[in-house]
Each structure stands twice: as structure tokens, then as C-alpha cells.
Amino acid sequence: MDAAFTAEQEEMRRTLREILGKRCGPDEVKAAVRTACGHDRELWQQLSQRLGLPGLAVAEEYGGVGCTPADLALACEETGRALLPSPLFATAALCVPLIIALGTAAQRSALLPPLAAGGLTAALAVPGPALATALALTGDNTVGPWSGGGRAGGVQARPDADGDGWRLYGEAAQVLDGHSASLLLVAAHTGGFARSRTLLFLVREDAPGLVRSRQATLDETRPQARIQLRDSPAELLGEAGADDGAGVPGALAATGATASAVLAAEAVGAAAQALARTVEYVQQREQFGRAIGSFQAVKHRLADLYVQVQAARSAAYYAAWDPRQGGLALAQALEALRVTAGEAIQLHGGIGFTWEHDAHLYFKRAAADELLFGPVHRLRAHAADRAGLFASPTAQVKVAV
Image (cartoon, rainbow, N blue to C red):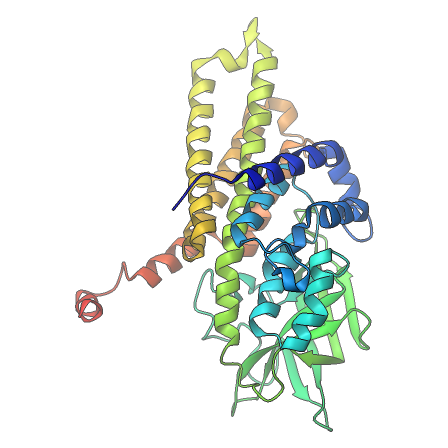
């Protein structure tokens, strides 16, 4: 593993930090999230066209930049620093990999170029609060009714009478950027008890019977929507004849591994910025005639935070190189962000406890991300189960043999 970044990666980091520093301060973030779409459309187009962020991990033949998921993770570290509200994660980290893995040649040719250019945004709709399970971050996604198994619940899919398409009925309550996405990838259950399986479907924003409503969330920079499908027409993602769904859990798990590495980098960026703002504050705030940052107790707390953030950054960079370690890296990064954001509020004193203070933006991001993609102890428990750390001695002998 070569931990050094290339000149191109460093230039992308520098350019992105410069743009976000000018256009994405705390006041601009608060204003952007209160718009109808939940983000700054002009800034999104600038990031898409100038830097090609949504197409970083898309092959050049489909209009992308042709980089690796590691480049996307590096970019998201910078967007995390600014808490940038944008459809980047939902589009580039969740939906694009699924279209690449499962889509037909015609679907890839039709969808990937506009997604890479930023003109088309996408969102992954999973029924209920089951996004972490669907992506195999906190459990096995090949078992359990996370997609609404059985004859009711979640989203149900049935073929049209003429057999040329599908109809979806049901709802998904926590869809990242679902209120503004032009394209929805909906995980739906079909087959009843006889051929129970989960498939992915493409639903356009103007589909009949589609109702979308933005939800009130703890973290406004990570907008969520409730998606209701009332006999809505949909297109199967993948070959029409190969609808057994055998490859869907694997594609979701692979997407979850990469997405967790991207999320870890994003959380590290947010934690680092929260720490930097706190260090700057304690150097200016005076108590008893001296800066509070000069007190040994404060220095020790900040030093502990620095070590924790740097350890999380190392784990995130390693996961970007080897996404199989994404779950553990995400757990460490989310924990680092939660602890750092909490200490930032404490060290800002009385002003830090006001709900409107900028420090709470980072605290809300930490809490909301752990609710969506965690919690931390379940991320670690699932990683331990996959590694066989708690297997019985007999099982370990069998594995070794």
C-alpha cells in the first residue's frame, strides 16, 4: 500500500478546499439546507462541471473521470470539513455503483453519463430504517425482511399484466436526498412466499403515483424524504429475464463497503474541522487573564482528540484502499466525530451550548450519521462476526482446515 497521495489528488484537494472555503461557510450551509432542494444548486453544478465530483469513480467511456473510490473518499473528506449539503453521497457513493454492477448495457449508457455530469441525481430508497442492514454494514443482508418480506410492508413489486414492466406499491421513510433526486433506485420485495426475493427498480421523478415529502431531521445537511409509491410504474435494474435477485444482496454489500469508506473519510473531515475550530477558539478565549488553551487540562483534552482524529483518518485512508475494512473504519470515524463534536461544545463554554452555535452542526451530523449507518457497536460487532472472532473453537478448527 502506498499511503502517499499523487500530485493530481493533492491538487483536487486544494482546489476543492478553496472553493468550499469561499462558498460553504456555516451561514451559507444553513441557508442552502433551507431551500426547496436542500442544497446550493449553483455550487453543485460548479463542483460537477469543474471538478467532476459525481463522476470520479465512473469510467471515462461513460463520461466520468475514471478515478478510483479512493479519490471519491478524498473528495468527501473535504466536503465533510464544510458539512456540504449536496447529493454527492447519495448519487456517487450509493446509486452509481449499483447501476454499474447490476444495470444492463443500455441502462449504463443512458444513466451514467448524466449522473457523472451532475445533471441527473439519484437516491437509494430502502424501506424502513434499514439502510445499514441493506448495505450489509450492521448485519447480513441476505436474511431477514429488511425489504418488506412477505405479502405486506415495505415496498412490494408485481409485474404488469402485459409483462413489459413492473408496478411498485409501498413506502420508504428515510431516503437520503429522496425529495430532490431525479431518479430513484427502489429496493422492493417480490415473489411472495414462493419466490421471495429483493430486486432493485428505477423510478423516475415524474412517475405516476409517486409522492415525495421532505422530512424534518436532526441533521438538515443530510436531508431525508418519505417516498410513497402507489402502483407506480418502474423499470427493473438489470436484465429482464434474470430477475431472481441473486446478485442484488452482493451488489448492495459491495456498495456498502465502498460507501462506508467514503463516509468514514467524510466523518474524519468533519471531526478535523470541529477540532480546528475549537483549537482556534481556546487560543482566543481568555479566563483569569490568560487564554484557556494555555491550561494544561485543556491541552490534554485537545491532544486526546487529535490522536483520535488522526487514528480515524488512518483507518479511513486504509479503507479507501481496501473497502473490505470500511465497516471498522466507519465505526472509528463516527466515534471520533461524536467525541470531538461533544468536546467542541464543552470547550466553547456557555456559547457552545446554544443550539444555534456552529458547533452543533457537527454534533448533529455525528448523531444523525450514527443513527443512519450505525450504531458504532453494531458496526464493530458485524465486522467481528465476519472475521470469526467469536466463533466456537470447533468452528475455528473447521475454518482453518
